[in-house]
Image (tube, rainbow, N blue to C red; front, side):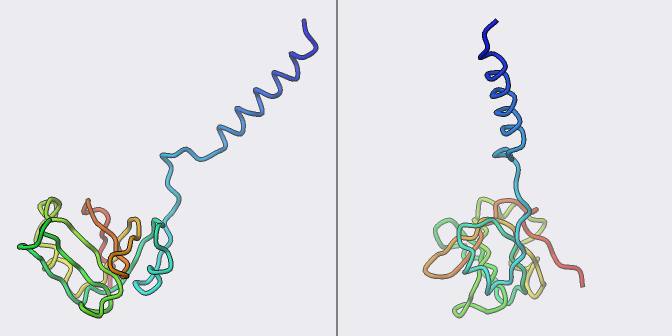
Amino acid sequence: MSRRFPLLALAVVLAAAVWCAAPSSGQEQEAKTLTAEQAAEHVGEVATVCGKVVSATYASRSRGRPTFLNLDEPYPDHIFTIVIWGENRGKFSEAPERLYRDKRICVTGEIETYRGKSQIEVEETGQIAVEST
């Protein structure tokens, strides 16, 4: 038996322990909770952004038929927008612009920017939660 065997075995055990302790790519860390204003400082991160829907529009004649839900400040002075593309509207129990208007909600997803404004694109209804009052 080689003297190297115990060292090799130890190296394999240590490597396995490190691999098992590391979070897998499928595990998500708990998302930060931010205000609409704070979202601009967290572009590229997955977070939960909360605020009041103060303006909401379904652009049915625009490419992609987007719905825009603006939190805390209305368009055109908006600071954060939730975008729901037309292909996902049918997943909601009613039109999102009516369902969420004037409600405090939280949306979870990756924060992006479009024309200097922060936003999250929503694909599933579970990404949006109405805050209880």
